[in-house]
Length: 267
Image (cartoon, rainbow, N blue to C red; front, side):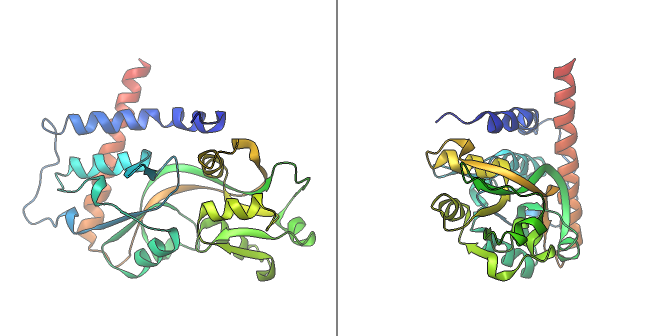
């Protein structure tokens, strides 16, 4: 299935990161982080992700996406005996709760916000993301602000504990107008079948989900931006500091090599 122009632009924008990750994996035999025998292994970490394309999603029975490729490169670079097959794939709410309460658990790709800051340790950023209020095409709805949406009595589909839901809570959106969805596909269904007026979610991810459900990407229309923030690896705060430091080092090495590859291509 052909992807829409917006999704193609995002994929092109992340191509250099993918190339860097592939190059990094191929070069590991010649360049690895020196392992200290006293250092704990990243294999003791539990990695959890969800459907949030183009960063992390299922492609058939295989995990794919730019964040998945980045993490695989990080694991390979530290000689950790894990790869994408060891990443757990859960609905967002379950993954978020596990990362919140279980030490040595890493959740990605997670939006870093002020309300979440003290709940996790953070490694990144992985990418920038835009969360908006979306309407179905042809709904003839205009929203100038969150207050405007409230005054119009517009109902909004959200995914519990998702950044869109949290943004509405922080803005004081009435509970009576918020409609929790099981996942992003359910939220899309609710919006397109007029069970809600709006959907609070990432623009690019929503359009990707729409296309995968055989709709045109512009079936959903962004009306108002709730937040512009960055995606990270979120780690339970009680995780061994050595593991956090080791994962941070792997991230920095992987991204620096990716930038080096990009710079070489630009030259």
